[in-house]
Image 1 (cartoon, rainbow, N blue to C red):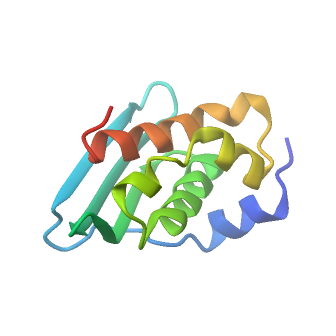
Image 2: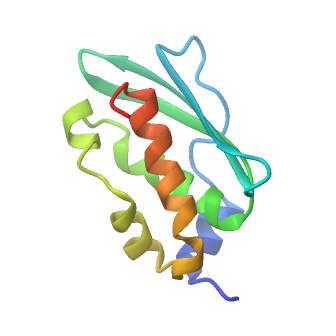
Amino acid sequence: MFYENIVYQHFENPFNVGNVKNPTHTAMVGNPESGAVIKLTANIKNNVIEDIKFKVYGGGAAIACMSLLTEKVKGLTIEQAMKINSNNLNTELSLEPIKYIYSILAVDALHKMLGTD
């Protein structure tokens, strides 16, 4: 299986890796038996995602999805962030259908963190 260059770029040099210091919002989703666990932390102030970071136990597609997602939502309002869906990530990363689970998990983590799951 080969990935598009954008996946390798996000995998090799991911954005927003780690934990936000003193987060206002957190979420954890996934299952180690299925291949990925995602932890998401953020500081949200006045309905705006000011900072967001992630940690992933999983492979390149999971890391790329979280890197891209966190870059997309940083600075957005909660309402704007909620409009991003797994299809947006799949399209931008050119993921094969077998890897769609990772974009679904990424969006699930965001929804859980924002309290809208």
